Image (cartoon, rainbow, N blue to C red; front, side, top):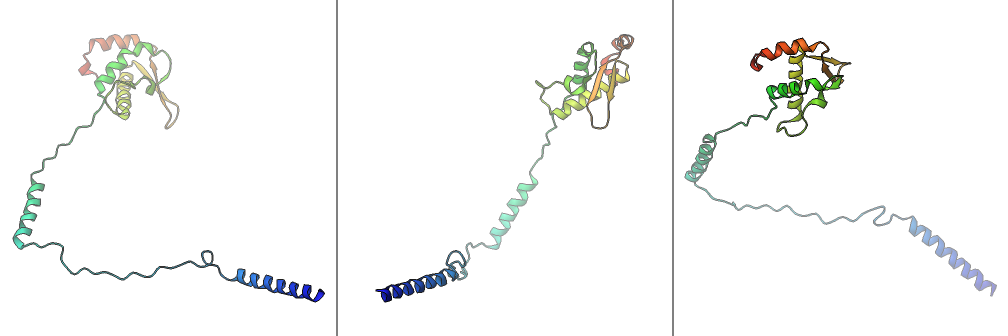
Length: 170
């Protein structure tokens, strides 16, 4: 019985070593991968279309005529006019006692123009009012917000401005 047990243990040891050798081999899908068969190159030697010289010239002429007859119309960009910005700033001029950002007094809704155009026109109008002595403008440093307020002694300048028509401002 001891001899059979020893033989069985030897067999198990041999199976264990064989399985370790098998698992040490490169495995399909982990260490190497399958390859497909290469496809041959297919060459088509038959033409797909036929055309005579006259037909080619007709097609070329149609393309040239279509490109010549085109008319281009460039749409003008939508802008917020300086006159509208000036009128709006003049309406709210008395309601700006302290420093307020110029961006906050520009119209945000109801204007059919890009925001950059609205801000630029409002800034231009504010510069005109500052030139006429109605507004004070300040900016603390580069790329900081621009602040405006009504000038303290603006009453005299406003009286002068009422006498001048809007077309003469600027």
